[in-house]
Length: 441
Image 1: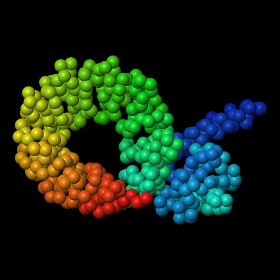
Image 2 (image 1 turned 135 degrees about the vertical axis):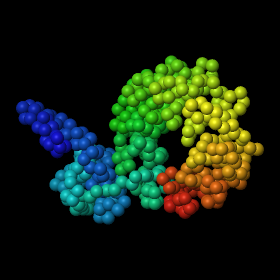
Image 3 (image 1 turned 180 degrees about the vertical axis):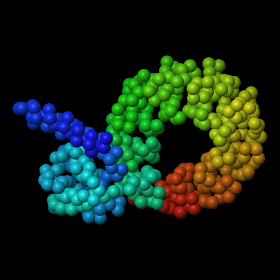
Image 4 (image 1 turned 180 degrees about the horizontal axis):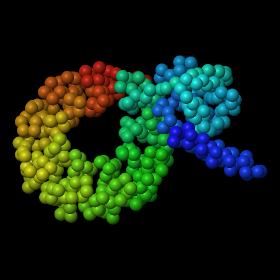
């Protein structure tokens, strides 16, 4: 069944009862109208991969306005600007009072190539624009970027895609990003800048597998991408989902639940860790550490005093003061000569000696000498290291490919990294070239 045919059926289902309401027809039509707005607003996400108007609409002081236009869109080229008040959409000259959801449907919910008339007011002057609806390409990756006191989102090549209109912003995870609006309310937006939902509290959690932790009173549960409660508030504490399981606390014990909120691994441990490579570390009543699989089998008995989770097939465990690398069969493969600082990433692990950090390979051979005051793992072939109180980047041979010059530095992701130099945030590529930089005040 096509979605258009389904829409026609729903129109009939809503509209026919309204014809039978007599004096209540107006009220019935209003209910029908609102229901259809909700229906088409929900379906619009699936019908149109990208908005066709080139602008995001919002409402303030009971009136419709342009939040921003998308870079390179026809709306931007025509001269429509962020902040413009909308008074006309096609023949409707009272569009300023239209519900934003319905206005978005009027503007975006028609085929690409069709035309639309937009009337806006700006500085006491009115302007009429005739636009042809178009497809707007959404970048696969967007990155939070600060301009002045506000945050927006840039593309990988440094173009501002979502303008800086947020007090705070985080990276996109699972298709949504947590932001703080000017009214100090938190909310989640998609990559078009459209608000999925808002929350009136200061909880800072990102989505994972379609769910995000949320607290109500003293208890925790999960909400979905529409802002609806998906798993009831019945836990003492929760964590993000990983591999379809989430670590939660109930009655002072820890276990793992599925997406329905049911325990897959009963809450019987003193503590636990997220799953990594199919296994999760758990701590028993004797405060010893072992590993469980995704169905709760204790595949590595609780016998260790400390550990680092599995990475690239190996976990670091500590027992009786000694460190060992073990595999998933609990076989000791290596006994490192040096104290391990962080686990393997891209075949190398950071080790520390005399407060200096170097790197070993999986035979425990020292590959990169002890010379750094700090270091991350390797991401996209590079590790950010601290040398003479500045951050730079080395490759897997230990060559300094981007000289130490930054006050802070992040790992590379999708080809760029966020760094801070001379008090200004900037994104750099793998050659150290600046692709975007915060402007000086």
